[in-house]
Length: 235
Ligand SMILES: CC(=O)N[C@H](C=O)[C@@H](O)[C@H](O)[C@H](O)COP(=O)(O)O
Image (cartoon, rainbow, N blue to C red; front, side, top):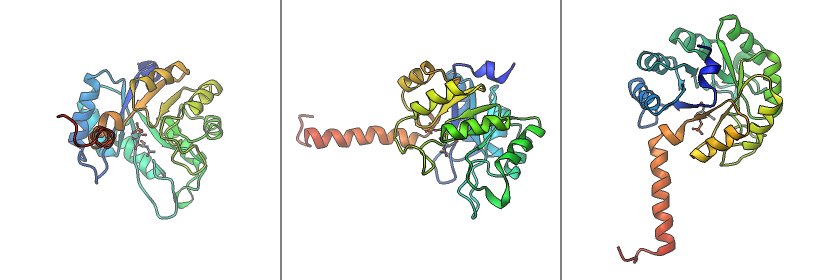
């Protein structure tokens, strides 16, 4: 089935753990993807070829692949070069997501060249952007969809701790290709609001798949409670 029909109005779950996170490991991420599938996820977003291939072996859902890799000469770290694209293609990613900001990429690789490369390999291209201008430019290059992933993570986009509803609304209205809302969607009400703004689908990551951060929301609430009610409360 057409991937965009399959994910329309659904929740894509980002299953990612970096080496310094407690759930790091491809088998664990595959179990996480299975849990997301059981909860009704329409697709999975995953980091590294190893995680993509282990998830593909475990769940029958489309997988959007990225490789987070830092190079010394660039701030771009989400699928920065063709090398990472090759790793994701070898792993069987259905769509390749990549940083589509206009920042300098490592080793003279260009954004235009990245889109050409992914399309020449016959894969779907998802442009991770931080502003409306980047969204429109990425569309003009021929990407298959745009995602708000990087809003809040470039110095020139709004530094807010809620999802960028404004960007999602504007980009959904301005683009012809599907707009995917991603970044800090942490409540079911955020999902409803995003879909109401006309986005094609939403990606939820940390709020589902990073238990150390989920735990922190609760432990912070406990600390706040003590600071309000004091430690001498009845119980
Ligand atoms: C900025 C960046 O590196 N974002 C990454 C992109 O794949 C992931 O670390 C996020 O978890 C993902 O975008 C989902 O967002 P959230 O975890 O906020 O629901």
